[in-house]
Amino acid sequence: VEVKEYELVGLVSHVFDGRTAEGHLITHIKRGGSAQEESEWYLMNDFIVRKTTGDAAVGFHQHLWRAPCILTFSQVHPPQQSPPKRGAAKKSIPSAVFSVPSLSHQPQPPSFQRLDPHNMPGKGTAIAIDTEFVTITEEETMVNPDGSRTVKSEARQALARVSAVDSRTGNVVIDDYVLPAENILDYKTRFSGLTAEDLDPLSSPHHLVHLRTAYLKLRFLVDRGCIFVGHGLKKDFHVVNMFVPPNQIADTVDLWSVTGQRLLSLRFLVGCLLDSHIQGETHDSIEDARAALGLYQRYLEFEAKGVVPAILKKLYEYGRANDWKYNPREPFPLRDVLVVAAAAPAGAGEKLGSGTRGK
Image 1 (cartoon, rainbow, N blue to C red):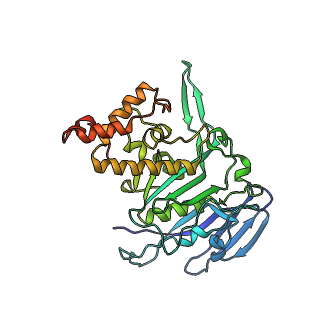
Image 2: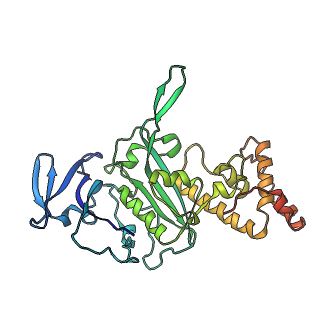
Image 3: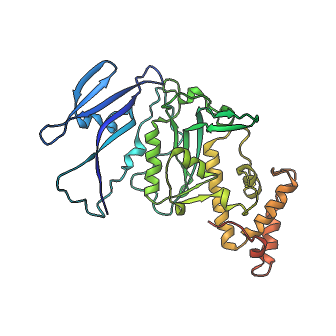
């Protein structure tokens, strides 16, 4: 296996100056580094250029007011150097990332309980998550000669809030609001519930963090082997730009669906299967994470009884009859479905739900 080594030679950082949410950018450049010349690092801040050190350039853990934006690497060409041994130890993310303080100047008591470093979730632990996003660039379209429109570039979204619930305790263990690194065009307040004040360190009462902090928390849970539970996680992880192994994802939008038929909304499923009501027009990521966890636990319960196919069949019948909305005046007859499914001959449930998706 060919191994190539790269070294960091430059980086651009976003600095929060405490006066505005935008802050400004600074640059660190590495100069020299040949066999005859010792490398030197330089800091460029507006018109100021001065020498610094490599440790200062990458010391983000020491400076919470600075976050990396762009990293530049250069390939190293040693004269005779054997590649590193396979199976070398992988650097792990420290659990201290869950103790990073809020960037807000007016923090209120947190809406979550920090994970105990001595009782971290491990392999197979279900962690329910939900996210809220804001729009940072609009969709660009082009009008064709025939009057049709072609999308040149899709609208870009940015993570603005992430919440997580630990299935072991039912506690909210993450509820981070993310400091924007770019100008926000649309806070999607009607759907996300977010406002400019929520993400401004000068006015936000929430636990406000840099994007890298929110990312590292999620990456820590991925590396620990946790199972991520949520409704529509594919989009969430795509926007966050994080790969999660498929066997660590339990998406309730897939678990409670039939191949080739429409997907069922979180609100509809919660009303039918949990006899509960969520989400007016405005979403709340904690409420949605708890709802997804409840649906996942229901799935495991009903799968063990072999009644998921029968429930899915009735769910789609009920949805068609009620325009795919939960009708509290005519509740979903879950109890009746369970009674009928329990009395059905062995194997009947499989025929009812042919084509259903598994975990």
